Image (cartoon, rainbow, N blue to C red; front, side, top):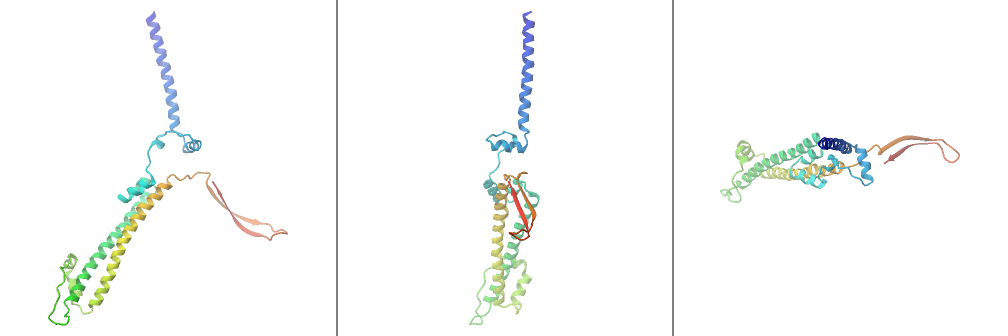
Length: 233
């Protein structure tokens, strides 16, 4: 008889534990599905709900900017704010700057070799005196026909070749400035600002209303037409 009573008590205890556990589990589940508005309201009064979204550690804007400087486009991918268009823009601008560096650098080397060849093979004082130039660059060897044309064509004097060389030298340096500036602005600064805007509160309470206004004339002021701008936050 005592054994049956003990088994009955154990069964009742297990049943009550299951009911209490289910209620507690449902309560915890309800706390994790609170809306964002409810979570924001709880934060304003000093409460914090440890939902999966809140417990997930977010990168600071500074870290996002540094990662984007180390890996171009990584900051935009992490922010997820229009990354599908920002990453191609960033990489496209940087790719254009890299192409400009290669294009201007190759022409700079070609014109430098042609200018040296034209200048130092010209007799100076003694018609038999010639000063040797440094070894030709790879681009001058690969484009030997253009190199010979610039050197042998009398239309291209040493002065005109020097002017062309200086122009490409300036463009070459500006291309490097453009690459560095685009990397800093489009990767570092842009992703840094986007990371700050991720936590910017845009709710229904924030609104801008613009409406026309027409005042009726009276004895103190004439009729007037205007615009009312109201900002609610």
